[in-house]
Amino acid sequence: MNSSVPTLRIAAAGHNPGSQEVAMVFTVQVSSELIGGDVDEGYGRVADAFRANFASGREVGAALTVYRDGVKVVDLWGGYRDGLARSRWRPDTMVNTFSTTKGIAALTMAHAVSHGLLEYDAPVSRYWPAFRRNGKDTITVRELLAHQAGLCALTPVPTLADVADPDRLEPILAAQRPAWTPGTRHGYHAVTLGWFESELIRRTDPQGRTLGRYFAEEIASPLGVDYHIGLPAEMDRDRIAFIHGWPRIEAMLNARSLPTGTVLNSMNPFGLFSRAAGIPAGVNAYRSDYNRDDVRGVEIPSVNGTGTARGVARLYGAAATGGHQVGINAETLAALQESPRPPSGGTRDKVLGIHPAYSLGFSRPDTAFVFGSSDRVFGTPGLGGSFGFADPDTGIGYGYVMNRLGFHLVSDPRELALRQALFRDVLGARPQS
Image 1 (cartoon, one colour):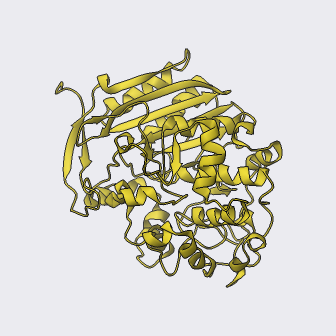
Image 2: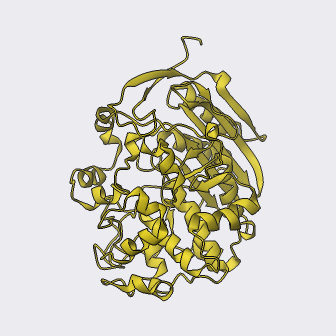
Image 3: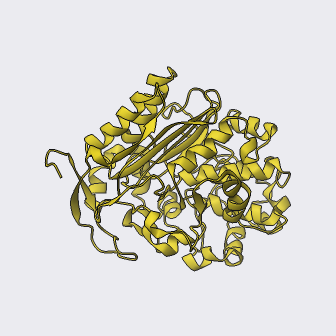
């Protein structure tokens, strides 16, 4: 390979499933020959930005898909599915999307609301009587989905075996005591939110399905999208990208990329940040544990969705253009676009130490995180840089996935460059941040 191609330093910790070895750093070269796909006329600036991410040495493997008014207008992929083995990223390569999964789970909840299984303003205990214990009796579905329930950490911390069995996990969830008075504050339910959502689906779905199964059978399969919450055993593992994390020292050196409040909160090993992130027991994202097949296979509907950029963009593209293709009715779709209802005690996130906006399971634009063409946009970013969202005003469904973890809480520079090219340069919409 041409030596003039930029090299990217990547970590190999956990390359063997279950490995917890100290990370070693390797270099990988990504040439323009490893970039494929196409864009419609007028979207060349987006392709330029995608290629520039690889030319600058910032990507290992990545994909970007954009739908507009139901038509795929951008479909790009490139680099390596596994940067150490030099396995190429293919058009159908899938990767774990971390918290981008939350948006897919929120679309699933919107489907359930549209079909009369749930109401956003009903108390959770209406559907799940055991939930009312320990001061949770008045928490509404809306408050839960807005990270206002105070249930971001769990005691005891469930094991992966607990997670694999909903009947074992449910008593742990039901017994929790909120970390603050529900509705007064919000704090990012980094891992727990999806399990509470899944229990609501399980208790209201006539077939008693988990959220992952409900999503697969009611949304993903009819729409023909490659996205899974709980990776099926029969799925070809050669389609799955290896997630490249970083050695601990690299993470420490890049702490400046995070908001000060987040860094300060993360330093307390007994605080909400550490407790919210340390679930399930023995699973650590930056240690590459999400490359383990036992982690991929269970349902963690907040963080372990595995899919393609095409799948993410297709789902959000359907949501951006009326919602009927993903089973969301007009009333529910309108609710997804309404302004968030902030907690009564202020918007500083008790877990992340920032001032985000959440609504109905989605992230929404705020002063520090502007995405899409208007504040009616909804979606979720994921750890390391992935992002998916729907923009009803432009009919855009957007999906970006990658396998090299970045350090930014939102708006990873690689993803932001793509989003700027699309919204500011191509569509002439507002600048992104």
